[in-house]
Length: 356
Ligand code: XIL
Image (cartoon, rainbow, N blue to C red; front, side, top):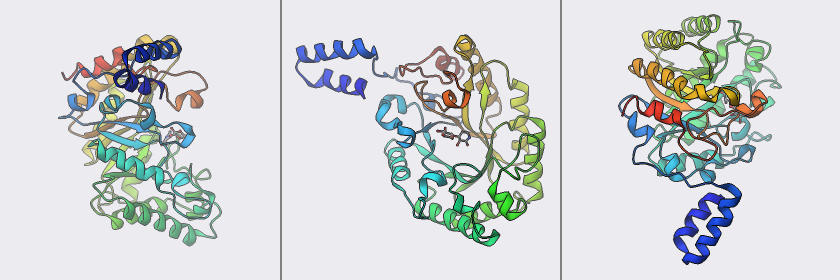
């Protein structure tokens, strides 16, 4: 907020006042507003895939659209709500709907000519207990799921939210269905809830693209099980799934390897699925930051190689001043290509230079 008002005031009030305001603000924050050099990430990667960012709209008290300069947000042509389209935010305790933050994202994206990736319809986390955990029985839970998916897809058409993570994180790291820690699996007594979710979404709007989304997909047992799930539930044969979202919460050092990333993307691509990189951030200690630029370059080299399968690459945030990794990991992270001060880092150029 301060840097925006500094910027506006510098242009809008008499010079002396502007200068003194500038210095008092600069002493406190030393932040210059983001200035584009005329080239954006989204523009640079235009012929390959969308470049997206997760944005926050007030939940957890951070507001991306009030924090980031328009010119910084213009680096992206796709947005995902970090929390505001999850059941926990869309649904109140009384089972009503609360659309205001999600509506705002859709409006902000439209005014910027950006697309919206919907995240997420059915998940074991950030979902009020009444959906499944405390539902009377399977039929009641199934009806809650159906009502939710139908309402959300009626609210936003395919031009407003062009795709959805229909089911998020249904597979365990060990390579089995997430069972006791999924209220959906528990009340259904099996994985049929996954197929129901895709079927309800497809029936609600056949023009919306439907994704299965998960983390650690690069790991063999989990990846094999995701493939098995898609096959066992006949999601491709029955035309219920369009693609897989690879969350890409990866490490700044060497996990996963370029080969592993390439093989993962190609495996789903060769199944006939579209691939979205949905939640890219690179965790690591501050001392490891010198690795970031080359690591991002390596990762984007693979994305470009595999771009026939990839339609979208979304960072799980905009700049280093707001990342879920700080609380998730318990130490400060600097996982993006824009700094805490909203400036381009070396890593920014290491990916943009691959295509410029
Ligand atoms: C995270 C958000 O970034 C946090 O603000 C929130 O407190 C917890 O959820 N996988 C997902 C995302 O699919 O929805 C999660 O987002 C990160 C892990």
